[in-house]
Image 1 (cartoon, one colour):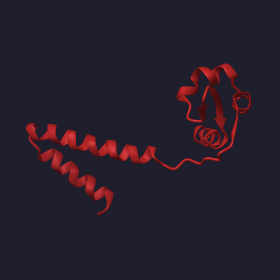
Image 2: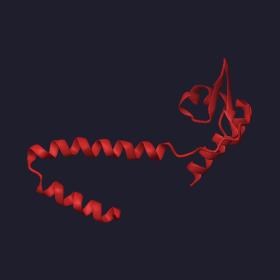
Image 3: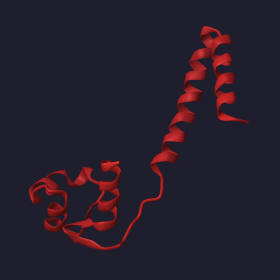
Length: 101
């Protein structure tokens, strides 16, 4: 079934639902949206397997080493191996492509 047809049917179901049914619909739709979002975020990521130093990664990004150390936990391309932090080249390139697009 075409996605637009399904959405039209969903609109009809929502319009016909009484107040009590709408709460259940919200829960069911939220569950399906979460599932769809998880599928989007699970898209394959290019990994080169090569790790470079924080200094090299900072140079490529045009930021300071200190910035990468402070924000590394939130950046997908900063990897921690033991006590060392490194930058994965493949993840860095994918990050830059996504941000530039």
